[in-house]
Image 1 (cartoon, helix red, strand yellow):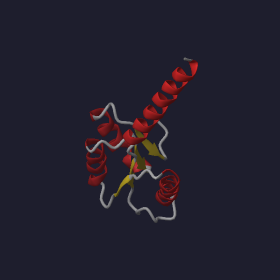
Image 2 (cartoon, rainbow, N blue to C red; image 1 turned 90 degrees about the vertical axis):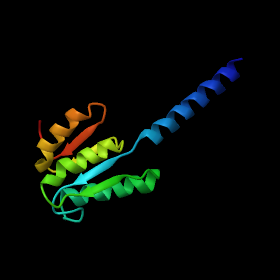
Image 3 (spheres, rainbow, N blue to C red; image 1 turned 60 degrees about the horizontal axis):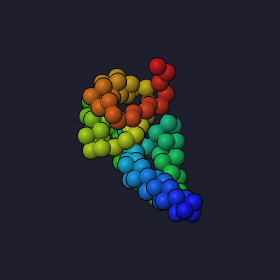
Length: 115
């Protein structure tokens, strides 16, 4: 009986872990300068690529070309179910604040901001 309960518990943990991994849909919005800017953007890109290679989990990405795109890309990622969403750079702070309020169940994070 103990062995059966252990097996059922283990199966439940495995299924829960698999469902969590499937629900994990990371995304990043790189700021102006692009993902090869030799700074924050590129450091984040390098980390994401290492994460992708080690876990097999893909991520969505956008590279901002003009300020208006920050909010637009954050919103589009949230609408598509990305979570967590990472914004790179303090220039995205107001866009993250605004869009995060619209999507309270989505996790947002930002690099280079102290709130």
